[in-house]
Image (tube, rainbow over all chains, first blue to last red; front, side):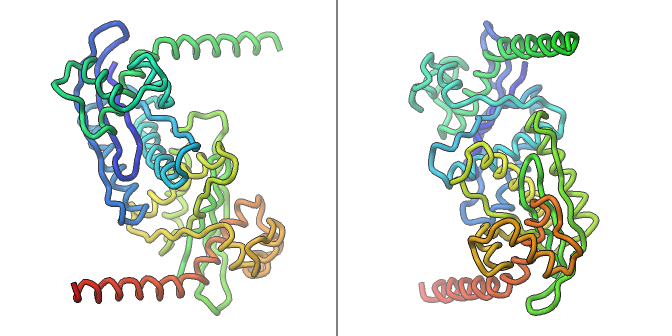
Length: 177
Length: 177
């Protein structure tokens, strides 16, 4: 399974591509950051993010796009920008018919470090180890994008089983009613 | 000036096109709502909104797109959806090189009713009167999109003067330093 992880943001949007299946060694295919100038109009920034993501999708052809699920308990202005950048990521994926998976920051941390409350350094260090890199990817947004992709590869089997169970339940209910 | 007003939302995204200049009677060119099913994956919903907006842009060729500025003091889940739908609207506009103008709900209410705290019914009633319609556009999202377009037509001259003043100030500063 090839996953593009996206850590959405207007100023820095982290992107990372990882190949792998649960229980086997993972392989990093690419990592980077799409940056847009803070003083540019918001519409233009979203267009630049779209262009950047299209390049990554075109170059690496992932089968799934994993995006960080945005919560609004943080700083209001940042959350809006994050929600807008994540919308562009989900749009680009869905337009290509790719499934979009959302994982919360604590799910990602728990998946790669074992603790949902791990700090940035711990996440960076585990990503480095799991992908056998020489140093943690910089900036943190790039490492977070790889962590999202890893999280998805590891959680996907369980998520698929859950979806199948829900679908089976719905079918059964449909038959009864 | 022809303005496409967008009242962003995932379930109902209001769209309204108005022709006019400040101080002259306004003309409604079109009004509608782009709907997406609440049980569809978020990425697919954003693709449907993009497709709907592209049809409106293509059919009516506005010169400006006015989008409601999203705040996060409301319900968290709704705000995320609104921010995501507004990102798609800003992206579609900017991709065509169209300027994007953001107006807050209270700016819109103040522009069309004289009060920033007017209710939905008052906004609908003023939109009906200003555009000489037979009845208030339904649902409220459609009326709000028209109100946004009207607000932009009326506020644009002042906004342009402000932008020119800021640009002039920057040029002066640039010369001095």
